[in-house]
Image (cartoon, rainbow, N blue to C red; front, side):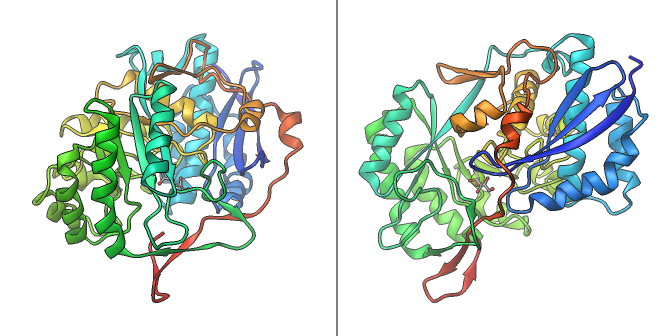
Length: 404
Ligand code: GCO
Ligand code: MG
C-alpha cells in the first residue's frame, strides 16, 4: 500500500454533547476518521493534535500503523497520560480506517477476522429507587439485551451516580461549571445488596447483571460489597476502588469471588500490566480512544488472554460512534472478548455520525463496510458548535471532596 497523508484536520462539534473528531486525507482520495474525545478536557486534545501532531503526519504512509504509533508515542518524549494517548488514538483509528478502505475490507478482517457472530453488549438501566430500576432493567430486556448494568438512587442521597435527573437519558457532563453530587459509603453499602436481591428476583437467573461502583470505596469496603453481592452472581463489579493503589485489588480478591472490571481511565498497558499479570481483575475496560488506539488495544488484549482476563471496553456516550465502531471491530476479532458497554447515542449524534454498526438480539456487529464503517456529516456537525461542559464532582455528607 503506497498512500500518502496529504492533510488532516479536526471537527469539533456538540450535538447534545462534545465530540472531537480527526479526519485524515490521503493522495488517493481515501480518508479516515479517529475519535479524540476526552470528556470535559476536549480542547486540550484538539490543541495537542492541531498544534503538535498534524504537522508530523503530512507525507507519511497511513498503512504504517505500527511505525506511526511508535513515532508519536516515543517521539513525544513525554509519554502516556490521557491527553497524549487520546491524541495518538485518534491518529491510529483514522489510519486503520484508511487501511481498511484502501484494502476494501472491514477493519476486523485486518485484526484476525471474526471470531464470533457478534459482540455481547450491556445496556444501562437506572432509576431513582428499586422499583424504577427494575422497570428500567425490564425495558432493556424487552428490547433484546442479554446483559444490563443497574444503578439506582441511594435513599437519602440527592443525585446518585448513574441516575439521570428529570427523566432524561443519563449523561454526566453538564454545561456551566462542574455540578456537585453527594456520597455516603455507609448508606450505599447498606442499600446495594437490597437492590440486587430485588433485581435478581425480578430478572430471573439468566440475565447478566452488572454494576459500576465508580471508584468510590476503599478495598475493605469493596470486599464487603463483593461478598454481599455474591448470592446475586453479578457479571462484574466495576471500578470498586480508585486504581492508583493496585494492591487494593489483591485485598478485594482475597475476600470475594465477584468478577472485577476496571480500566476506563487507563491510558497504556503500563496502567494495567500488574493487575492483569497478577490476575487481580477479570475484565479490562481501557477504551480504544483513551488507551492510544487500536494498535495498543490489540496488544493489551493478547497479553490479557494469557492471564484469563477478557475485554469489556468502556462505551459510554462520551466515546463517539467512531470509538464504538473500533471497539466492535476489535471485539469481533480478539479471542478473549468478554462484553462491550452499549449506551446508545442520541438520534442527533447518530445523524451527525452515520454508521454501519447495528444491535440485534443482545449483540452488536460492526457491519461489512470497508474501514471502520463510520462517517461524519460535516455540514450537520457545523450546526452544533463546541460548548464547554464538565463532569460533576462529589462530596461526602460533611462536605469533604471525594472521588466522583
Ligand atoms: C461507564 C463510565 C461512565 C463515565 C463517563 C465519564 O462505566 O460508562 O463510568 O459513566 O463516568 O464515561 O466520562
Ligand atoms: Mg464506569
